[in-house]
Image (cartoon, rainbow, N blue to C red; front, side, top):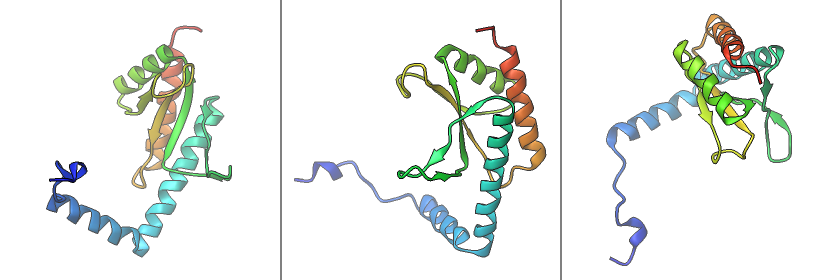
Length: 142
């Protein structure tokens, strides 16, 4: 009765524990190494494609500034309203990304946060690139 921090804690749900154990098993297996390589290759492909289309991709870095790749590819949009319109256009076209607006990001730094998976094929990523280009073209002029 003295430990308020634990007042509403409970044991993990068995299904969640099972899923976590299986995820750890896969990541430690040869299949896991292949999946990691594939997801990072997909992230590089999407990032490079977005950059080639003229989007500002925010590079991931270690604390010391070393460039790294992650399955998250953030795309800087800037204006909150333009980011929301872009997000909606992508969503309506069948591409789900997350939108980050102020106050989650600093004012003028709204972004779209894309996530890739190891199971994405090149045609999925190419279609995503097409949709990004089309969504940007559908926005009102700045």
